[in-house]
Length: 310
Length: 282
Image (cartoon, rainbow over all chains, first blue to last red; front, side, top):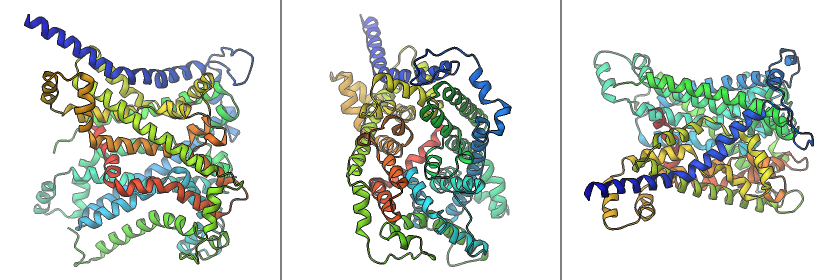
């Protein structure tokens, strides 16, 4: 009697467990797996919204078109989109990574817990504003008569110069980077502070007794032990940067030129939604997906092999 | 380590650097607040005067009324509140349910299910928005709350968090409740759910903020002014030619108030919420 009963309890348990996960499983199938498969499928057709003609299978034409080197001269081509995404990602995530690490190390050197806490919260403040609000504020700062020019002119000693923040192609890219950097710096500072806090202080004590100074401590102990956090934060920052949309949308809608900030997501939006080329936009989506997927896999690989023992 | 009493040059430099970065992060926010009280002529005056002369109530009136006096701002902010709150609630509920199922029940294919859910973290929303947009068109749910909410009902990250948290939940409590004749669903609602408050708070904030900040999806789904959300309102308002800068900042400030209030009252969950990403590296 007893084994039979426990067997049925197990079966009942299994049924309940399955019942608990099934709603989410259905959700993800419908709203994640189906769409990505559908995007992949659609990228081989020439589907256009509002078009009466049935979509035709065109094989790899969409991809060929995206990567056709002849289109590189067209400043709104996908190749240039990839370039501006790359410029934006590198230009944002490298300063983000370095400065947030420096700030985190400096903050953790402070003696008073109150000022530690205050600085963390203060640096985090921009992150609670929405991207649209952030872009709106900075659009006013980057106004020709705005604070951006006033500050730059004081810093560089160039009174009365207009730095053409939202007009000049390079400055426009810099502007998007500044906005993004401003919004996310506090977030990454906190990630690093958490990482730093997990390094046991006894290691520093031991090395100080051995005669190491702060500078050596940082390069020989902090940085190597922080490597998993550094990898995690860089991949997260890169993934985040690859998905940027709101800032670029706001600047473009405000009249800034499109080509320098025509990042992949923005290009998908314009091509798929405004110009209604659904298949072409799907092909771009797949490229974005593959890009981000490979980055994530790199992260998994490095974090798996780099488990640090203290 | 660093004592203010013994200031040496490197320490001064460190403090100076932290102070400059502090100005960089806070001044734009201060600018938004002061500019919202100024006339547009005061805002672009050189050099900028950080202390507003007087208080331009008209800025806030204009922000709420809109340039065409339709008061659509109120409707849009309500839309954002409805969508963000609903998403926060469904995410928490479904993530807790699924996380509990994955953490405390043994069934065939459990690991496969978990891996499948984790795999969706690698599918960026930006890559599936075109097919999702087509689903919305087919179902005729554009310009509706359902359309705005549906793709965000639950997040894989939330499930992961819940599962991690509940794995350490003592199974003895659950068994005791079963012996007492409590139903499985009752155990979930009465014992498990009330005991995951820290994860619930973090998750609710993350999902609320995600939708409060969302511009891309509403841009696809909501074309009618009535169904637009607050990021759309701000962007439309800022781009209308007749909008003056003061009113623009007033609208931005008003739209940020809910997040500011949340942040002030739940700071530790915000800060903790970003730190939980750390656990992903394991």
